[in-house]
Length: 388
Image (cartoon, rainbow, N blue to C red):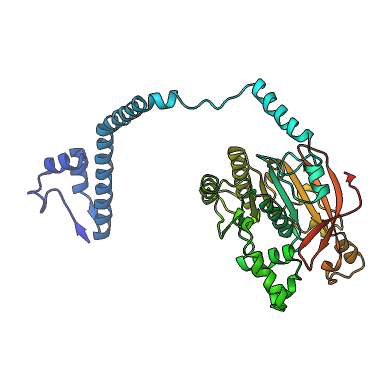
């Protein structure tokens, strides 16, 4: 126990000086000197007094310097505005008027008038799909969705190959498949060699020769690839680079649910909404179509029905942002589940139901495509489409 008394052992303490240093009133100091403290209590009190002193010093500094710093900041802002006034006021005017819109529209209509297939965008090579969508148009945000292993990526690859053969350069960004997977699918689709044979290497001499001959085709340079890119900031930089350097006319992303936003969000749904809006903004900015692969949740299978827009996994604002939403559906899976035959390999079914569930520039419709799983290729079906 340590005792501090005002009239015993502390006569030499200059209480007035203590008061001036600590800003504690003199009566309070004299009162404190008459108290009895333990060592730990005294240490705690000294710490509290020290912290209070630091806070007062910081408060005084802020009061003295905040106004000065604000003046400096405003002065710097005024200098920036003065230096960039001409650039800010003389920005390129990107607005337009109704006359220019109609003029451009009439030009497109004149070009379409002489065509057999009325496509305003890039054709897929599949008659019904091109007829109902009019091709993938500039600035469009297109979603191709379905359950896993249904043929979504194969459809996008087939469309990209068709564009490349017509000298239309494009970009595929994949977080889903490797270079080897693209190689086997493209070789199978283009050369009509069974996919399994390419994967396992069961190839004849003439098939190997045709694969090496395919390597010489000049149109292969029209299709660019990027792998392992899953951030929206990287996406912006990547698209701008390929637009400027390679003059790409479309982008395919495989698939949407593997992308992330750099911004903190409360849920995965909100995060995907940010990514979706970024894709929409890029399509609008560069006036090129973005075809994005997306996964569906299990509800359509569990409820034994065809997919609907709300089945888009972690949907967020995807269904609102997209201009076109296409579902690839295997009806045989539903039939198998009804018959309790869930393990039947659905690749044996050679039909896929193509459902255009959203179409800003056309009608909602569903039609069938022939699916050849061995060649990873879609073909036109003789049946017409059914409005939905």
